[in-house]
Length: 203
Image 1 (cartoon, helix red, strand yellow):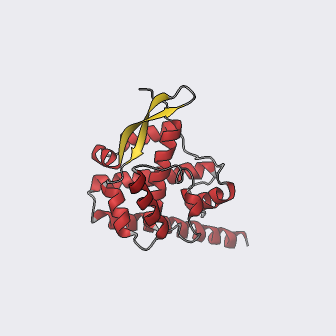
Image 2: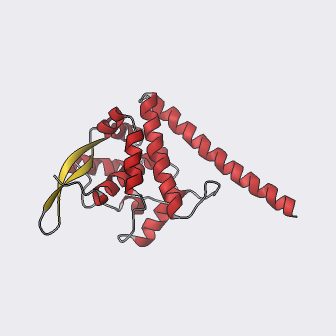
Image 3: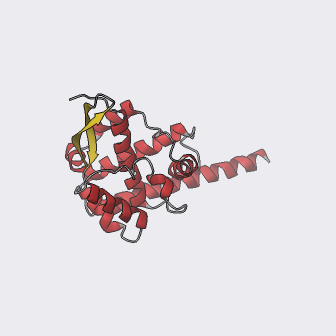
């Protein structure tokens, strides 16, 4: 009996690990038509970092069959608008050092943001509306309304707007969490938002 349970457990873990590997290969193949190897690696690093931060938040080990992004979507739905973005900002800054420099500056730019009663000016990370990655997402996901609406709002506002802040995952229909473009967009959105919320570099 114990041996049978062990075999079933190994099959479940192996199948999920195989699925994760297959997803990573599918993402790489899809992105390789538009981006070079360094850029693809940077995108995958961002996605892996985001998912690993979610795993830590939900106490999932690497062998867990749960999808951390699917769990995060459910979590934000249940706790919107008062939910935590579970990303360690120091670890996120370490991530930046591993990314291809060209990719980083094509995806994000720096601006200024005023905070507090004294309106102190801080440096703010902004998601570029005309970056190659967002253009790719728009082209590749025309039939997915949540991505199309997000990108249209982003372009009109020129940056993440108040109506988008912190709420994106809570509006995603269940069953869409496996979509590759959506997972990339979620990663970019919450990395940008986490940086904006936690960065305190004054001008």
